[in-house]
Structures are given as structure tokens and as C-alpha cells.
Amino acid sequence: MKVIVIGATSGIGRELVRQMAEAGYDVAATGRRVELLESLQAACDRRIVIQTMDVADTEAARGQFLDLIAQMGGVDIVVINAGIGEMTTRWEKEKQIMDINATGFAALANAAFHYFTKNNGGQIVGISSVAAERAGGLSPMYHATKAFISTYMEGLHYRARKKGLPITVTDIRPGFVKTPMTDQNDPKQMFWVASVEKATQQIVQAIEQKKRVAYITKRWALAARLMRWMPDFIYAKLA
Ligand SMILES: NC(=O)c1ccc[n+]([C@@H]2O[C@H](COP(=O)([O-])OP(=O)(O)OC[C@H]3O[C@@H](n4cnc5c(N)ncnc54)[C@H](OP(=O)(O)O)[C@@H]3O)[C@@H](O)[C@H]2O)c1
Image (cartoon, rainbow, N blue to C red; front, side, top):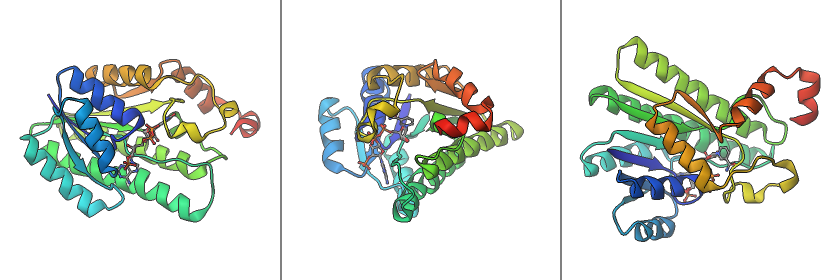
């Protein structure tokens, strides 16, 4: 099985490449930081393909994605993991979050959907977040982009079903995972923090089981349900 991981230089994406390569998948890894891609390739005994890519540069990224598929002789699973987050409402940063998490995500998910439509199907995996469940006051744009990702993937799932296409769409919604992204957070604002190894094991399992939606770690399914149903006057104190 051939897999492309978009955004694989650190954290969850990097660990996903490591675990999937170890499990025998043919893996390609992308990201902006070439030196980290090269060190990942070395750590995987040079068994993986690497490609620099900035998903915010959507036209270039879509071209590089198709070139990568040609180089690999096809692809079965595309994991779109690239994402940034920051607790801010500064417009310059919010626009960057929107460009990478939402526009960049859609550009690649759309390219993967059309590729799989023409080439006998496959699986699109998007790394969303429990933040998709409801808005958040600490980083309004991060929550909004994750809701976008989950809703877009749900739409691709329905479209594939309606047209009888053998395309699986898997929406991964992690809670807190210890990565460079969460290292910037105040530890007092986090709970149930999973190690990147454990979270990634559960992500691989969800991919292999072709889940429609998976919470990582599993107990976050309960927190997500609570978030969704909590009355506004209580949620407002937490969000
Ligand atoms: N950690 C958590 O608690 C948590 C919880 C829920 C969801 N998530 C989601 O999980 C995903 C991975 O996050 P992480 O925690 O592993 O963070 P991370 O260690 O900061 O990794 C983010 C990855 O995204 C890539 N990326 C960022 N901007 C990019 C761009 N413009 N083009 C291409 N790649 C880009 C980075 O590569 P380069 O910088 O080299 O480009 C890096 O490999 C994100 O989508 C995040 O929202 C994380």
C-alpha cells in the first residue's frame, strides 16, 4: 500500500511516516522544512520518498502532489495533516491559519478526490481536531478551520457515496497530543495529553479500519459529545 503524508516534518505527521514505513507501507513525506524531511528519510533508512511542499501555495502544492503520485507509481492513502495553531486574533496570523488549515487542506483533499475518482478509489484521511466540534474563544480561527475541514470531508464522503465511488474519507479528531504545536500552550489549559506515539498508533488503527470519524485518543469521543451538547451558559465559561 502506498501512502502520502502531507505535513510530515514534525509531531503527528512525522511519527505517522515512521510508524507506517516500519509497518511496510511505501511512504512519501512532505513539508516545508527540507532539513527535517532529510533527517526523517535518514531515520527511515532512506526507504521513504520526500518532497518539499507549502500547502498555502495551493497551485504549486497540487502540481507537486500529482508529480509525487507519478513518482510513486500511484497512491492508495493520502493523509492531510499539515496545520498550524496559535491562540490569537491577530489578523495576519488568522489569515495564515486559514490559508494553511482550510484553503491548503481543501486544495489537497480536492486533488486527492479527483485522482481517486479517475484511478479506482482510495482513502483520504484528514487530521481535523476535537476543536471542530464547537467554537473556541482562545483561537477562534483554529476552531473555525477545523470545523471547515470536518465539514468538507463529510461532503466528500457523501459525494463519493452518491456517485458510487470506492473512496473512503476518514476524519481524525485528536484531543491534546504532545507535539511542538502544543509545546507553546499553557500546560494548565490542557488535559488528557497523549504521547505522539500512542496517538499515532490509534490514528494508524483508524486508517486501517477505514473509520469515518475517529477520536484520538478514544476517550475524546466522550469529551466531544459533552462539548456538543453542553448548554451555552456553561460552555461559555470553558471555551
Ligand atoms: N497536537 C495536538 O494536540 C493536536 C490536536 C488536534 C489536532 N492537531 C492537528 O494535527 C496536525 C499536526 O499537528 P502537530 O501537533 O503534529 O503539529 P506540528 O508538530 O507543529 O506539525 C505540523 C506539521 O504541519 C506542517 N505544516 C505546517 N504548515 C505547513 C505548510 N504551509 N505546508 C506544508 N506543511 C505545513 C509542518 O511542516 P513544515 O513546518 O515543515 O512545513 C509540520 O510537519 C495539525 O493539523 C493540527 O491542527 C494537533
